[in-house]
Amino acid sequence: MDTEIFEKIFTNRASEKEKEEFFHLLENDPEKQMDYYRLKNLYVVSSIDAHKYTAESRTSFKNFWNLVQQSKRKTVLNGWMRYAAIFILALSIGFMANYLLNSNPKYHTEYSSQKGSVSRIKLPDGSDIWLSSGTNLIIDQNEKGEMVAKLDGEAYFNLIPDTSRRFRVDLGSFQVKDIGTSFNIRAYQSEPTIVTTLVEGRIELLKNSGEVLLSVMPGELVKYNKQNNQMLVNQQDPSVVIAWKDGKFVFIDQPLAEICKELENWYDIEIQIEDQKLAET
Image 1: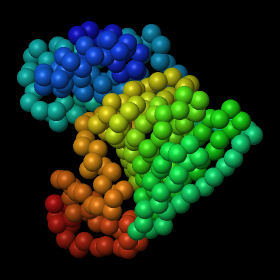
Image 2: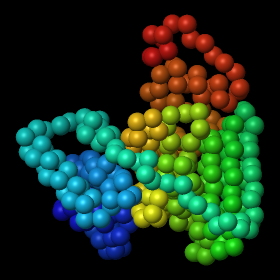
Image 3: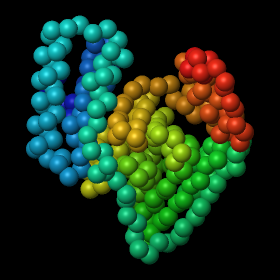
């Protein structure tokens, strides 16, 4: 596979036939699947600056490709996590973002969910949004019908396909564009990361210019670290991510400290762990 088809898949510019052939090749080939995620992360690194995404970005991506191919010939790495150190150097993601609304909004609506509760919102078109504990959501719509949501907390969006409606979630560092989709976003202002998970359908991550940074596939999780501007794409069972919607806690290989943070958020309490070694287990 060459760089062109990977780039077209990542930015959703591939034809349906190209997509079908591409993912058919991946389906029964674990090595190609690893290449897909490895190069998807490298693509994010090489094209993340919205002001330089032209021939310069494509050249950067191809340079990354060549380095990886050389490394691949020299060393056989076992397992996805062995590649992670290559991926997580993101450049200037701070240049992405802040989608500006029309100065004359059609309406402005605010929603919130109290600590320890889940709230459900029904939009006029029948779409549903669930708000997790301690979440605030603001939705603005302008005269053109463009809808922009701002989120502080965690929300699950189950949006009905509507070609006449444009819906985006402005996360400050980047935007998530819905295209008839079910997806989950965890973006508490007090937390250092933003996590976006696509359950089904399609979403795109957008740059400040409106260009597509990345097309996300179902079952993919995109984690962005606000403190060091790092972004990483990985696979995740969506049912684990959205278990909170049904009042369930699911923790897999998480340290006690992280589990306690989640319980603190839900029940508005403070948990102190005196033994630091225990907190890290």
